[in-house]
Structure formats: C-alpha cells, structure tokens
Length: 302
Image (cartoon, rainbow, N blue to C red; front, side, top):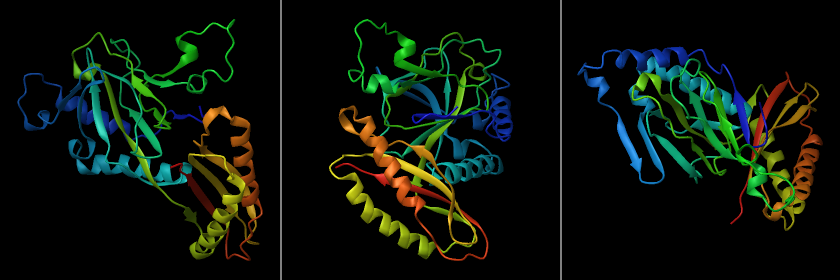
C-alpha cells in the first residue's frame, strides 16, 4: 500500500528470517547468563516512551546486519532518493510498552519500521504503529458537524506483520499502541527502526552527473518562480529514465511529503505538477546507453 503519508512493503527482505533467528536463539534459555543477553536499555520516559531497545548494528553478527543494512539502503536510494539510513535501533515491546504520539524532528525525511514480530499467532494485544491521518492534521478544512468521527477516521493503525516495511513522513504524529498480554520477549513486538537520510540524486547508467547537476541548478532557479509565496515544506522525489537520444522517459513521482499551511492542497498539487512539467522538458543530448535517475528535491520553510 502506498499513500502520500505512508508506504508499506510486505515481505520486504529475506534477511528478516536470519535477524529473527539471532534474537530467538539468544532468548531461548531464560536462565542463561551469556553476555550477549545483557545488551538492552529499558527506555522509559514517563508519559511518552516505554520499550526495550538496543543498537541493531552492534546486536546482530556483522554479516547478518550488513545484509539488511545494504537492502534498506538500496531500497531507499531507488524509491526515496535517500543515500543512507541512520544507525537503526532494535526495539522490543512487552507488557506495558508503548509510544505516545510524537514527531521525529529533525532525524531524516522518512522514518522506517521493519517488523521482526511473529504477528501471526501472537498472544499479545496492541503493538500497531499509529499515525494521525491527514484529515486530522487539517481537521477543520473539510469539517462536517453531521459526520461521525471515531478512532478509525482519526488514526491509521499499521499492524507489524513479520517482514513488513513501513515508511512514513516522520513529521506526522505517530506512536505505538500499548502492548499487553506477554512478558516474554520472544512473544512481544520486535522491530528494527530508524530513518532514511541524506537525500541526493542517484544515477544508474552513463548519464553525466555534471550535466544532471547543471539541469538541477536550472530547475532550482525555475522553482523559485513556481513556488512564489507558497510556503512549501517537505520532499518530493521523482524517478525517470533517459533514453539514448537523451530524452526523458517514465517520469513519475516516487514519494511526496510536501505540505503547505492552511490546508491549501490545490495550490500544493499545482506546484508539484508544475515541477514535474519542468522536469518533463529536460533533454541531455545523445547517450551511450539508457540511464535511470532518482531525483529528490527538498523544500524547507524557515
């Protein structure tokens, strides 16, 4: 499932099985005093966060961690235009663990949660990732007094199914529903999470980076005119191909977290369409072979 606010990829990586196996093996014998069991921080901020957490890159054996790190980085570059990920956390939620609503600023343009939770056959309740819906963030724009409003219309709940990657705009207030029903770490909510960072263009093929940079410079000049007084903030990532003739192909919006105040959604949409139209006019001259490009554009409001 993909919306402007959240992207969900099920069965994201075969490496999740190896990650889960490491965790299960370390907790297989509750009476064990082996050293690698003593790596967890009980993170408790009253009224806000309660969970067990540990740095994922030190918890897992290096080859196991490297495989999932590379998979996440490759996906982020191709689909978001982000060059890397932040050092991720491994978090475990058992009885009473939760996260109240909050926003992640300024960690990165996209947050991610990769679930290692044995969701099917679970014994606990809760554990869903909660995100405020866009309709709530602009609640009065389309308000109707005769329309009922319940939790499902206010909050999107994403189940942490095993192997599911959930990617979202971290500025959106989000949290984790309280887990109840188990004190066993192996039976709780287990997730790898962090942020996609360092947005910058990705070129696959012979297209000259110098030539692309020149086009981007021209585009930023044009964007100054396109945006005018519209206070746009967020990231819009475009994907396109360049054929042998140097012409644009397969131009599409890959991700879009741009926002404007006061709910002026039509103006925001016109702006994104205008940027896309500017891109569609690009030409690069004859090429030795086709190329593909992921181009993230970051808009900031002071």
